[in-house]
Amino acid sequence: MIGQMMITLICSVVLVSCGQAPVAQTGPAEYAALKIATSDKELQTTYSSTIRGQQDIDIYPQVSGFLTRLLVQEGQAVRKGQVLFVIDQVPYRAALQTAEANVEAARAGVATAQLTYDSKKELFAQKVISEFDLQTSYNTLLSVKAQLAQAEAQRVNAANNLSYTEVKSPSDGVVGTLPYRVGSLVSASLPRPLTTVSDNASMYVYFSMTENQLLELTRRYGSKAKVLEEMPAITLQLNDKSIYPSLGKIETISGIIDPSTGTVSLRAVFPNKEGLLQSGGSGSVIVPVQKQNCIVIPQAATYELQDKVFVYKVIDGKATATPIQVTRVNGGKEYIVDSGLNVGDAIIVEGVGLLRDGTPVSIKTKEG
Image 1: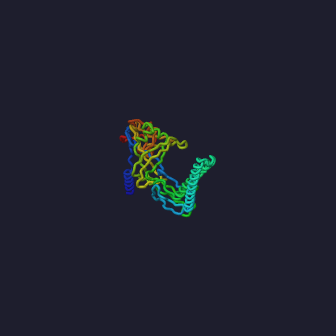
Image 2 (image 1 turned 60 degrees about the vertical axis):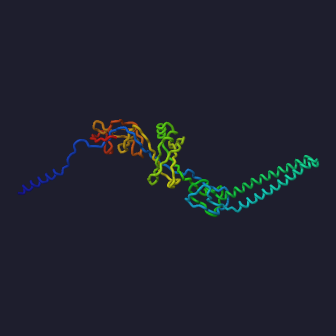
Image 3 (image 1 turned 30 degrees about the horizontal axis):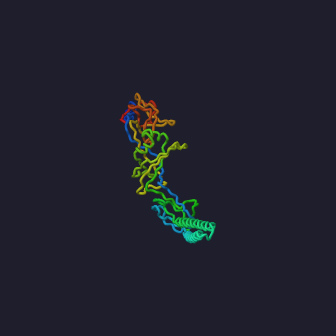
C-alpha cells in the first residue's frame, strides 16, 4: 500500500514538472530591420544660440553733476529722444547765461570797432590820418570780430552742455538695470553706464556651425550669398523648450573661422512684436536642411566604438558589424549616412545593444 502511494506521488511530481517546463525557442531571434533606400527629406539641425537686441546701447552722461531726476524704471519701453535722466542744471544754466552775456559784449565791441573803422576811412580819405591809423583800426575790427566768434562758440558749447543734462534715449528700446539713483554724482568716466537701452523690435540670434557644415551649405547653394538668399526660414526654440511662434531669417555669415573652436558665427533676425524675446537670453535655432537622394537612418540603429559609428548589416542571416560615416541631424536623433551603406542593404534597427557580430538573426523588414 505504501509502495503504491509513493509511485503515485512520483508520477504526480513528474507530470507537474513536465507541465511547467519552458518550451525551447527554435531558430534565430527575430529583429526589426530597415531596408535601405534613398529619399528626399527635410532634416533639422539644432544649434545652441544667444539672443541679443539689434542695439544694446550703453548710456553714459556727457557732463558731470548730481542726478536730480530719474524718469524711467527698469524694463520700461522708451522711445527715441525720451528723457531718461536729468543732471543738476543750475551750473550749466549759469554758464550759458555767462556765455550769452559775453556774446552781447562782443557784439557791442564789434559795432564800436566798425564805427571807428568807418570814421577812420572818412578821415583817411580827407588825408587827416595816416594809412597806419586806418590799418590799425581795421585790425582792431578783425580782432573784436574774432572775439565775437569765440564768444559764439562758447555760447554753443554752454548750450550743448545744458542740453546734455537731459540724458535721452538714442533709440526705441527697453531700459536695462539702473545702478545709479537720484543724488549720485555721475560723469562720462563712470565705471558702469547709467543704463542700457536695448532695441528689441527685432532680435538678433547668434549661433555657430562647424567649418564642414558651412562647406556643405555653401556647396549645396553655390555660394554664401546664395545661402543667405535662398535658405528657408529657421525656427527658434526658447530656453524652456517651447517653440517661438515667428520664424527667423539668417542674415549674415562670418567670414572668419574661430581657430580655437573651428566654428563660424552666423546671425539670424527674428521679429519681436510681443516682446517675448529678451536681450541676453538663450535658446536653440532649428535649421532645416534639404537633402536629396540621401540615406537616413535612426540613431537607435547605430552604436559607437572607439569614436567610430557602426550598424549591424544583415548578411546571410547574420548580424555583421559594419562601420559607417555619418552626419548627425535632428539633434542626433537621425544620421545621414555618407558612406558604408548601399541601397538594398538591410540593417537591424531595434535591439542593437543585445547583438554581437555574427549573431544569427531573423528579420522583419520595412522600407526606409
